[in-house]
Image 1 (cartoon, rainbow, N blue to C red):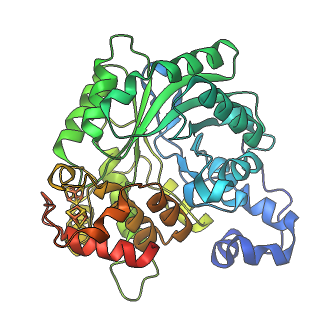
Image 2 (cartoon, protein in one colour):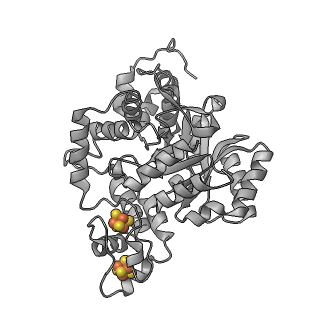
Image 3 (cartoon, protein in one colour):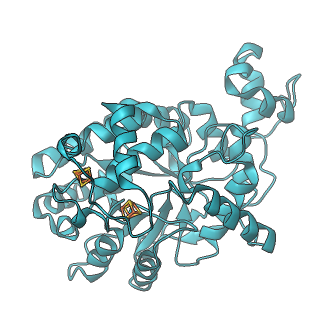
Length: 385
Ligand code: SF4
Ligand code: SF4
């Protein structure tokens, strides 16, 4: 996986990190290649992904926000050996971008992707797998996941299971997982309690602000031999300081340390957009959460408290129109935190109930965490409608 730096170029790694991939393009690919393949400063740390037996790095690459294959490749060359993508990310381009990052090293990296949320029939799921294999330019997917389950009943979808089983028999996929954003504890518990033990992994939102029920469900999953993959570890990645463009490196590192100190978590998949960010996050592997980190986390959580939605879904029963409030709030988080407007809009557009808010004279939905739901729904309509 790692290449040496014998062909050292006229710029050094520090220079590259400053100018980024786009700027480096002007100095020629050979120079960029040698820098991207530099030896990592920190030895990777591994944990076992539940009963799959895969030994994966505690920091994995969440490819959702990364349009440049060179940045993902830099992560692989620093030792990251697991990447998580989905076809819908980056407007359908993410799997193709990951395939470029994997050129020549496919056997060194485990690849996880997802079938489409709307694909619930056997044929639709099979078609999704075939499309992902083509986009990823690979003959197998290591972990295939049912995307975005928000109801524990979806865990038992017989047609999806049939499609996944067939794909495994054909050698096209190796292990099965689910991802969830809403009603996460219920979905994870349904995976744990499944008598067929069909799914091997769960991909869940987990961070300093996590619902205690999710923490408990994760512990049950680990005890049941299910690999736990943490996403949305940066609590939306909001910028909380005027002078910063995004979440600060200290905040990002503290978030990752907090997640990894829970040994029920196998790996975390933060989105990383630059080689600089990848380098900083790789260096966090194997380091301990400190008192300073905890202070940073408390301040960060406090700064975003009035608008950060934990996506628990607890408010949704209090809306007479059954609006998927947590999904709308997730769309807002993609826009305001990640600054990924297209993903945010696509997420909002998936909510068939979103328009019902405009016919509502007074919002009666109640947030268990004190968010002003009426204001959030207005904000979303204003931004996306
Ligand atoms: S405004 Fe509030 S109560 Fe009305 S539909 Fe929207 S979320 Fe539900
Ligand atoms: S608005 Fe509140 S209750 Fe609803 S999902 Fe978000 S945090 Fe949970």
